[in-house]
Length: 260
Image (cartoon, rainbow, N blue to C red; front, side):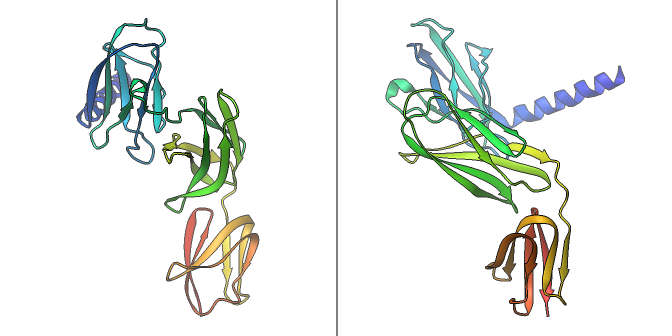
């Protein structure tokens, strides 16, 4: 009983804090047989701006973990008056792309998942040309690890895959799409904990070698931030590096070392 009360209290505190950090905007529209589309900017590394969508004062089921989303109104009749409320974080604001005013439909991600070391994502009815960028959060930055060009041949939902080579532990991925007209869309952030052995690193200054416990991507920077050596191997040869301070980046960790 006490445990249940504690959980309820925490939930209420969280709800109050979230309410203090959110606001909303509303509009009235006459249903003309078409859905509404909303651009949904990023709020932080793991959340998008919109918190909730209500239609006629009822919570409306919408997939919000994307940089754009669709408000499905197909359950209403032509001519129905719709009161739409979009609740969002205060430091950002979603943008309505009303199809009746001639705006193009943004890309909407339908799903984003993984199987083993393969990312899988699906999009609603892609049109025209564009480029997908598979991004991995590495060393506190989003880095593009693969590019996939796309040109729509026919109307319909489309699925894509990409093979990834993760670090040990937690990995973050997202998909960025840039359409032919320059419009940018993002998927939600997918976090995955892969069962990969943590990388062990041994720097041997006498042998002028760096040894890794398994084959691994790595790169070495000097104090100016210039990459002086990179590779994919179980060892790195540092015999050609001059004396100084260097930074080894491997398995999403950075190690500082000196060469005398």
